[in-house]
Length: 582
Image 1 (cartoon, one colour):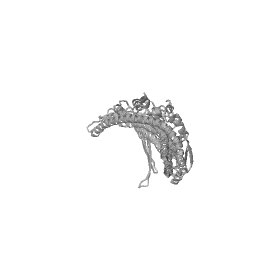
Image 2: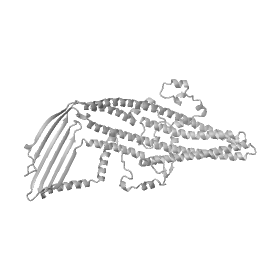
Image 3: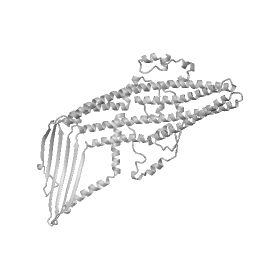
Image 4: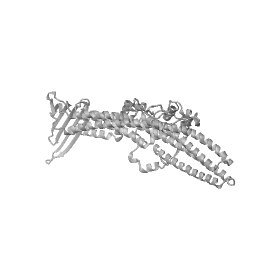
């Protein structure tokens, strides 16, 4: 009894201790080790470089059971004051944005799927211990146990499978006259498909291939999301700075209207009461406008906090310097024709590259389904040794090894499911072909629209710049004439309205041009959000200085495209202002 139980108990205890020793933390760390390595490998393969990547958050190192909902409720009530410039806003967004974190997790989960598929082609070990104690009717106690240890390996390139298994059965009756019965068996087998299932186009191997490609797609999707997210944060920041300037413009205009009201009141004895009423009415309207733009700014700021992932209750103070930098940089042009931009997109735009590769996937699946139509012809070999001698069960006699080899033929007598799968693969290929065509056409259309919008924003900026100059000059002139009583109050109010419209229009033109420029770079896949201050990176000449040198008369004489020219236009975009002057 002691010898048999002595063989079983250490093995059983060792297995239990090993399982207990592998804590959940250990398994989490091993998963991270493998999946982060997969991500690094794919990133190096796709982009030729690697970056630090982690999905850990401030909660990841804590026990989920110890994070109460009350803590989250209190966290979102924080009223911290945060001072931000553009760089710190981006850094804060990368670390706190909930949608951004979800995209990182999506990339990680794609690596998990690949890890699962790779496991099908790794050396898979299995082991089992099954001890038991049974008391029989005559009082005898029977202790028995069975142990087995196996390993299986699937070959990716050939589709074959190698399996080895060692089994040990023990039986001992605990009586006054012990008896022992035991048996051991070692089996090694190999199966190699010769037709269906052979090579890399078998279904199991294709699942691994697809999982690897899915990680590539997820890497591109995540990188594209990074770029888009960065541009969205920059655009939101500039929008807020633009609104701050609009608030200042409207406040200055409100003060000017108050001043005009004071002057009109002082002249009531000279002018009619109508001029005073017009001035007061204009003041009140501008006051309402000022109140409304403040509310609009606060609403936009709350949305910005949500994008950054910080509590809505936080107070956020934005640095104005990025807007001054943008004004100084001027309109940074992008010298692309629609066709040139399109050709850049089909080689750089990551979602387009994914669609091209999915088209290739659909072609590969046709080969996989064609493979499944073939007859099944498998070569099988096995060797086994069964040994049950009592005197020395730890050694084997090679003369007792049994070996066999054979062929298993599965005739393709019923291939309804397989033929339907093959026909479905052909249909899916043509669908994917059309989807790729649609993607390419959509990309070309998006680029054409983006180029037109960019040119539109540039022209708006030139016109608004000169419009402000003219409006300021007119207000200054009419202000003196109103004071002298040579012009009525309504003319001065109209001039003030024109000035505030041109001032706010100029702010919008600067911000909207920048948004359009960054969007075009995104659309063609030519934006590098990893660069410092990527939103101001340009090697082009400063168009703002050139626009500022134009006088109003010169701008007014620049012709627009006539309807006849527009409808006969053969080029990708309407002519630019420079072309018009020529």
